[in-house]
Length: 152
Ligand code: RB5
Image 1 (spheres, rainbow, N blue to C red):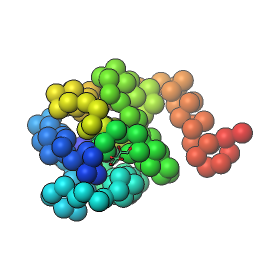
Image 2: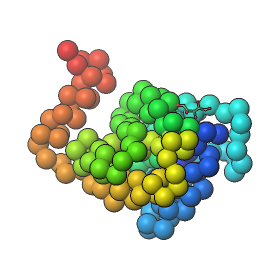
Image 3: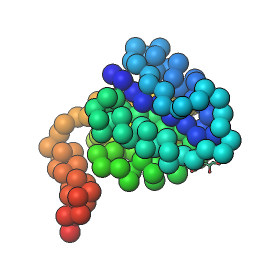
């Protein structure tokens, strides 16, 4: 699968390693950062939009978005229609978020976790599949209603 990967300056220390890990897992990393070097003044919402657009256009199936804490990345990405982003710093959430909640973007905080945990999280996220069970679909349909303003 094609996986869009992006980071602001806060997430940049993990950017290359995450790209390499996705390739090592047999998937295609699609780097969205316009430059190959750290950009000290850049803003995480810009990368959220680049990744979200790839998913919305079906150019990529999933994304990995890295900032300093992962919080801003998740907030920004979740504003986009069809994007379900999870900030996961434990491996259970990284795979269960896909299996139950069908998250399509993994958010990571490079100032919070180290490289080895980050790569374990990438593996858990990439290898996980949505179960498709009725109860999980039902919950996703409710989220879709919230997204289109018909949630209540
Ligand atoms: C950037 O300095 C930092 O604020 C950002 O990467 C992120 O941590 C926001 O959630």
